Length: 412
Image (tube, one colour):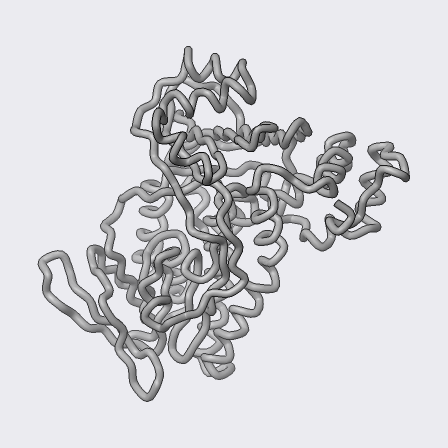
């Protein structure tokens, strides 16, 4: 009998299991995959995500894998360019590790903390008692069936969550997906972090990862997907050529793709009910947004820690466990709303005039750049950044005339 069973061992599940095991709880983690293994991802970790690894004693292990540090960010959004970085929670560089590296590190950390991990286990059902989830059943690689029981079950099994489906967790705050992504890995590029959005609703990004390689990606609206697929290689290159010809030339002349191009057609952005009798959802299982802003990994780490604290409160008898986990869901929803809304807006590849006005002001002063990159790194809440009094300081620093200042998207 376990205290908690976690379904899914990647960047939401393993940290949760590790933190609970460190608090003395008996934890089982199961995953259909074996590790190391890959998964589609932006790879990028914001400062608040990196700070969690540092706090847990795992950052040095990540750095030791040779992942290239990122110390400056270059953003351009329809002609407005912002370059810089901001220290957040003592973190002055970030990383974009390969998932074969990061996820394996996190699984090892869960095991080292005392959690039991079973790889190659596919959950096929949940166990119930008196209306509560009390365990899981599933199959291992040889096809044999097994059951495990626990006081609580957590689905950390991604956007197609089996646990979420089995408890019939309803979706809410659903926003349609806007774009598709193609990406791969390249040798031969000497680039910083770049994220450039052109005027014709297209975007490219590139950032360093492990093995001195760069993850290189393009994004286009979903209605261009069929056309794009007719010649993926040529259309991938064309996005660079049209947005930044010099980058297109460097990609063509110096870049050597080392793996096939991968496509991501993400589902709609959503929140999903993430707490119920004997169960919870964490990571993309309960809250998913477009990859444009790269918040998936960091949010999984941040809110996995919140859930660990709330589960510990319930398991230790500090408060009823279901109430404690509902509080996790409330905290997650409250703190993530700004990121969710901002991501849904900017991933459409055409910002309303309000945001363009704010970004232009932020790009025109050191104060504005610092505050913008604090926002991007998780050190400044969206409500603070877009508050009228804060916008006034940015507009004043940038010399924005009073008649051009905007304070709400409703003015767009």
